[in-house]
Length: 459
Ligand code: PHE
Image (tube, rainbow, N blue to C red; front, side):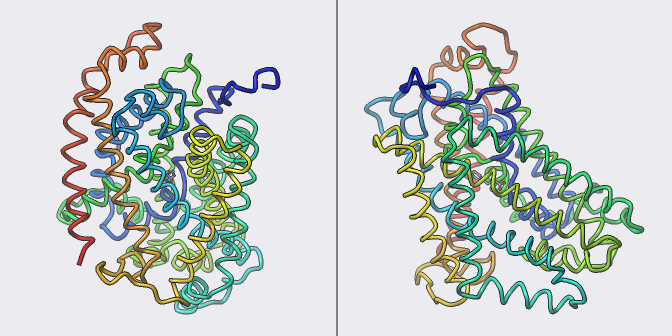
């Protein structure tokens, strides 16, 4: 690196690429959100639709992002400027940048909650609390003015620390340590959950489909969540793709990352629902599922103290490798397009995003801030905070739509082929199917979801 300062930083190894990209994908989306929406939408039938969205739309869009990024060797905005100069395509990157700021602002808040719960787990605060008290504790905590912000700041500083290390010596290095650690914890939690008496009810909730429970809302939510969970639609995988060496097989990498993300979501479900059913608790608790329901489960479970610590550490670790990838989108943009040093870009974007997030956190309780023309949110039914979450639920599919159209209609087929075969170094059999997915399947389905969300969003 020293003798060539102009060369872009990049990932150093195959495992490093998978760890970083899977680290981005595997996050609060898998361990906090996937289980609770699965619970809300009734279990297995929802999971089947989700898996179809992942395979039919998520995977092709992940490959699209990787190939756009690697071909251009540039950040989310620069990648479009380079490949379609003088056209408005770069706005896809700009939209992604805005989504990154919004998502990281609330992500940092929820990740802060997980740190608070690590602390509460270690200090054994859940013990002897009745379910109602656990609910009050969570509600009281997230609506209080100072404490959630303190943890949010701590979490954002951790994120900043990793990004300041750079791509290879920061993001890749920590992902390589944290992802195997995460896998280890989740496997331990699975063993515990699956050996509880009565675990089988939870397993059939996850895997025995009951399509009568499937609603239109469930289908829409499954597609939206596929984007969020795979970190798609905002240029994260374009940015990470730009750090992947020309020797790697992009299709294979996209497949591996998609499988890793899906397996971890399912394992999170397998860690949570058998335990929830074993203790006779309703699975449809919503966003409070892991913060209220699970501590209640841990209280009744042999070894619950240790498992509660492991669980919340798992959440925090998963959140960190994701937040890092979101910050990197913003940092790479300012460093490459605006000529700011990486260090300054990282510090100032962290400061700005943390301030926005702190304000959102305040709107959970202390500050009453509601935009008059918008419905109040359904996530926590509180206001600006959930509003931001819903906004991002729209921005990601919209970004994904433009990414699919770009690869399907703007790029030449021969350039796409060139990129997925490393200029003909090996053959792939999926180009036509891939192009069909990005030209037809993804745009149609995303358009349906997008308009549905838009109309649900305005009053
Ligand atoms: N995929 C991450 C998760 O599941 C969140 C994320 C979304 C990260 C968008 C980057 C971009 O938690």
